[in-house]
Image (cartoon, rainbow, N blue to C red; front, side, top):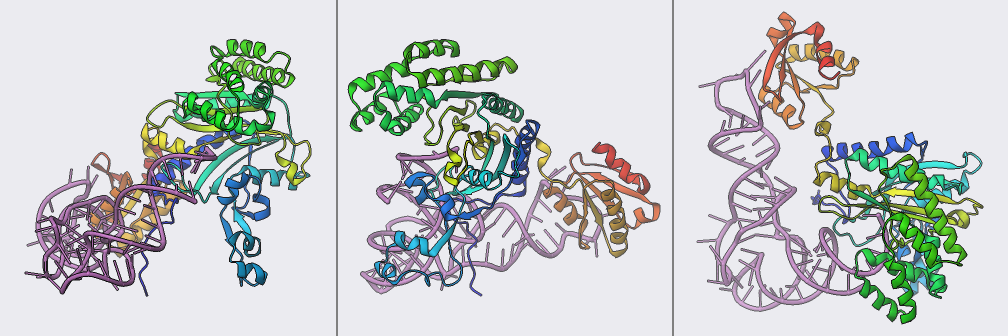
Length: 460
RNA sequence: GCGACCAUAGCUCAGUUGGUUAGAGUAGCGGUUUGUGGUUCCGUUGGUCGUGGGUUCGAGUCCCAUUGGUCGCCCCA
């Protein structure tokens, strides 16, 4: 048989056992916070019908969807004139009717509408799972990665926004990320800005431009907007808006002056004020800060928007984001189902925690005890002792073949198993087993009938 | 979609102006007189040098193409 090189497809990763242990630690920490706030976990398939996915992410997004080739004779249903054209875009719908999900939000919209009769609204769910994008991979960006979302569907109350702020605050603190800033704003304020600038039609161009401000210099952004057909007068309005600063309270006051008489702006400011005051009333230390340059690129946000920025270590980037979207379920026929949600950037959070050494030490191996032996007789004896430990919920294993002790201990060492129980003929005879602590390098004799208790004490 | 860079053992890499049978470390396996690892020492498996073509007496090395990967840009988590 021809040998195949062991390589991965681009933008994908294998995870070693230690990495999975760390990732699980991260997921479990977030899961616990979600559960505490009354969110229920759901799952949806990795595969969705292509019609569910296409058209939701813009033209760019559609290109980045992974499509799944129909099984069987997939060319059979392609009309011959399209085959003759050799045009992929025209042939696509005939050869692929499924794709891999691009995010967890669109599947959620489908899910909520499809199961609305069985769900309790407001529906609070969280979802942790892989998504796939046929993007050019680069540092920290993959074709397969995890998203970790919490959303509340079917409730316009601003308490929902506040709860999501609390979840961000609590989860980041719990993970040891203490230098996180929660930048917040409201899309209605941006809508008011567009109105004041007389460019409501170009709202998304404006939003995308503003969203770049944390990376690109202000002047460059203005320049780009001028090229896009904005006037100097409009830019001046934008510049004045972006110059508003100070404490949250002061910004709110300035905004009220700035947008006086623009009703959508007044509404947005009022929402923002309520969210901030309510959040601070229960969590005075929540690191929330109004950021007028926050816009969020995604089109579907309509109200509150939030972005969590990490300010420690070398990776100072966005590690979570979210916002309110009013119309997401409409395309699937869902009515009056406004939603608000957040997403943890778990891949980046993982990298940051790795850099800052925030993972606990003892995650590496699940196994606590390895039984070592020398021949068939001692192996059989050890195997029975092993089961006793397991029945007491001590995680243990036995070296599966008769091998030299050095090799068995070496295995324990590599797997970072802390204890070896050495069972030789002498131990069988005296019923006193040798317990070696591989971390300390010490060993002692322990009676076989108290072995379970011995390890239970070690691990509570 | 655009650009830059890279490709030699499972992994990390060396390989001189093109010159004989392509090396090292690490991992694996075996041993170190056989019941003590992480931290000795010795031996050993493993490569059509990403693939195809070209230049040359001769190509891992130079040229072209191609495939794959990494890193930027657009966009995004």
